[in-house]
Structure formats: structure tokens, C-alpha cells
Image (cartoon, one colour):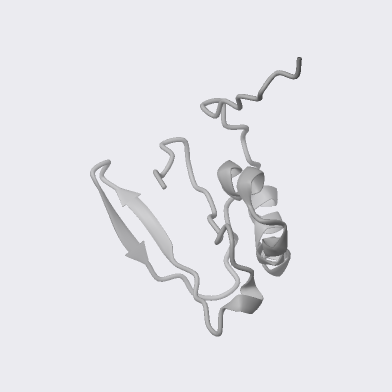
Length: 97
């Protein structure tokens, strides 16, 4: 997955629900100086950015538990920094005849 230049996103597994993992951890990656990525260790109940539009559109129905599990953090981020619509995403639908 390519990180968007427009800001922060949250990515969850597309096919596996939280119940399918014995252990999972959150990973935060920061893009610094416009030329590389570093992993950042965050502690506590920090806000989580808006969920990737790709995940929202293509997730398996069984994985909504990820969103539910982190809803408080996602909502806190929205309160602090409202999500902007991604104008670079284009959805192409098949026309029905």
C-alpha cells in the first residue's frame, strides 16, 4: 500500500478479524524529511487517524471488529482533526445496461 501524501491514515487487515489473531500490535509509521519512513512508538490511548478509503470499500464483512475495537480513538482523532475527503480517489463502477 502506498502512503498518501495528503495526510495520515489507519490501515487494518482486510481479510482477518481481530479474533483470528492471538496477538496484535499497533504500528505507527511517520514520513520524515519527505524521503524516508520511520517507526514511531506511541504509548497510551492516542488518537488514530481516519481509516483508509481502500479498507472501507474492500474489507471483508467479517473484519468490522477492527473499526469497533478502536472506535473511541478514531472518533477522538475526528474531533481533533476532521477527516478531509480524498479527492485523489476515483471510483469506477460498471454501468448497467
